[in-house]
Image (tube, rainbow, N blue to C red; front, top):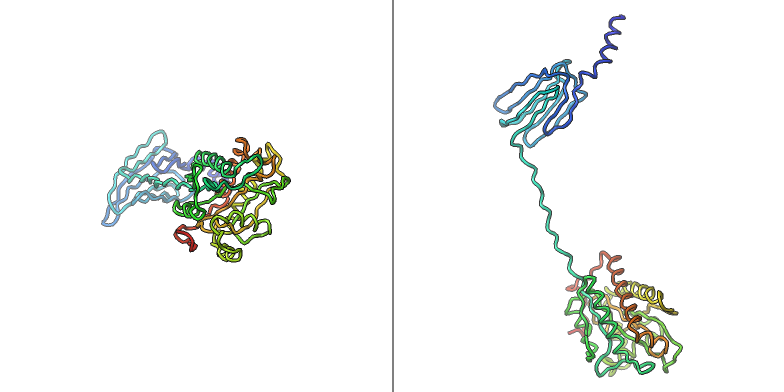
Length: 364
């Protein structure tokens, strides 16, 4: 009994010397207890086998790997032999070597793993922005403090905004690039023909009775007016195309809205308002910045999200001077550009298919 226990513990103590250690499978590299390995081939109709018997060896577990049509199995064949078998339904070639208690087996003519060529991804199409400098030519727009014309200020901001957006990779169109009169209904039609993703109409405000104390930034999106003041501003901006209609007739036309874009336009308006206000407040005070709903005619014909920006009041002496300065104009342009970027970055699923957009009756 004592002899049996001794042999048992002796076997446990030195068994580790008999274990094989697999370093890789392709090629198969195995550290073996000795160089005592027998190699032979088995052939019949359905299978071809290359067999290796490693004598006085132990494997801790069963291994099974496939290389194309060749199957590799490593298992304990009997208490003293570890057997390695490569098998296939067709003959194959391999090389092997035994050196310094290391068995290396290499399969020849294995099919190489095809390197999948990455699919060519087309660059994302550039977003198209249409900027609409309000008024122009025979229509000066508002005439404010020190005879500053609205049509001049909005064009200067539009040109600066176009440059910023183009440098950021956008495709940008202006409804006018010089002091030219453009009919109000032509402006949304122009955006539609360009298949624009966004439409921005630029304006400056004029206070009732030219009151000098009113000031601030207002960004509008298309919807029935949310205040009396918004209605008055819309009536003022709509005069060019709707001047022959009474107010009820105007409202009947302007509230026939393209409902699928209203919520996106509202979100866009808030993004732009917040970004402009942030840029301006880095250098100037800005007491008021608001988003409002109003039935602007220039926004009704667009087939994409659209906003109208009243950049400030030309009837307020301080604000008029700022609006006439290049620095202030650039801050507004930078703010609008940042608002556009924010809108697109947070609206990853933003898409109103152009072909499915509603086409109001006055579009041409």
